[in-house]
Image (cartoon, rainbow over all chains, first blue to last red; front, side, top):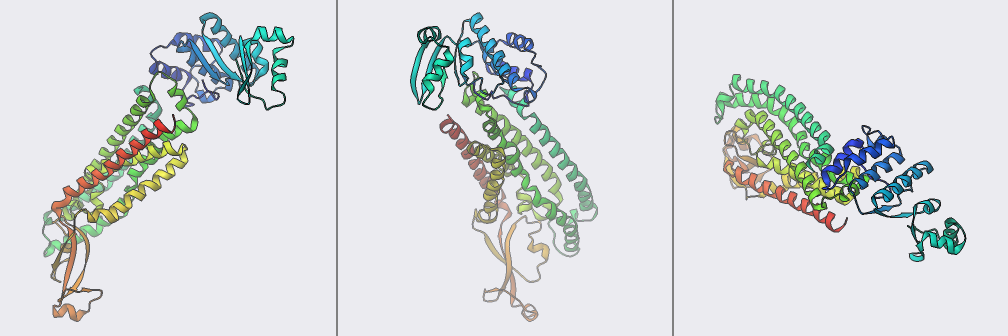
Length: 163
Length: 305
């Protein structure tokens, strides 16, 4: 899934899902519709008229409808407001728990990482600075994950945290 | 996959159908009176005859309706170009500009198949539009063609397989430019300029040279209709005057004409070469179309991967 959640803006949400059905052999549309319904995303509305958070949810629903075992997300939170971020990571946590899929995502949003991630790889200047389980990193440093990350990033430009 | 292509481009398909319908309405509205005048005005009975009253009858018909054709028809040369501008250029440029290619490329359909379906479906639409356009124009031009033949550009450009080749070449050029430019508006402008840059030199420079033109001389008494190749269906490229020694005269005097020392000469392509010329130009544009599609495919494969 890409950062700007590419979708056809002229398609309705339902048509976007139909696109997924047409182009994938494995496609779980019922679950996708149920998930979007629960979030209050109007299925009949054109994607271009949705909020950024709703678009991200449609993108995520389309990615999850393929029933992947590994989901790779490139900065999924970057364009979202705090509430949409929380909703997004909530959905992500729920499917990881229920379906046992793995999620690899890159993010600059340091504060969100601790609640979502099990493992962290911190990159700066193209080099791995920190890697390990979030629990262990926090226990060993005695500070919050956010503090830990910031400490490692200081002195250089902010690079990516991969979790 | 076909559903997706239809959903994305149904608006374009409707627009083309409406535009062709409107053009058809104009052509029928002007074509019916022209046919009527062709029959009732006596020009129909004069096909192939250029002497006596027939010269005047044909001249009168051409003055009235040939001129309508001359005003209207050149603009219709833009129709194939518009196919590339409005269908070909945005086809892939919009996907690249809006980033939606990443949506389709991350589904379980290969890039190549997606591209093949998109291009084939839109080429089929282009083909259908070309056939409809050529059919309309052939019907409309019929009376003029009976008198002047189908070799003159006014007819050649709108009848026969060459029309389909123009449409497909324009579409393919648009698609290729769209992939390379990745911007819809830029691609549309480049496609229009590019298609004209191909089409005009071929019509004005290359087409008269597909085969070496023939020359012949006519007596000064030959009528205007003879010179235009009426009934013969030849394409007259150039004409002028020669003196008895065979020199081209740039101006002639009344005395020279009365003294019988001047003849008219014509340079032309005879009517029986029409099929060869249509085939040659069709092959040329079809070849270009294939090359442009190849470029689009290669660019997607090697430059966007």
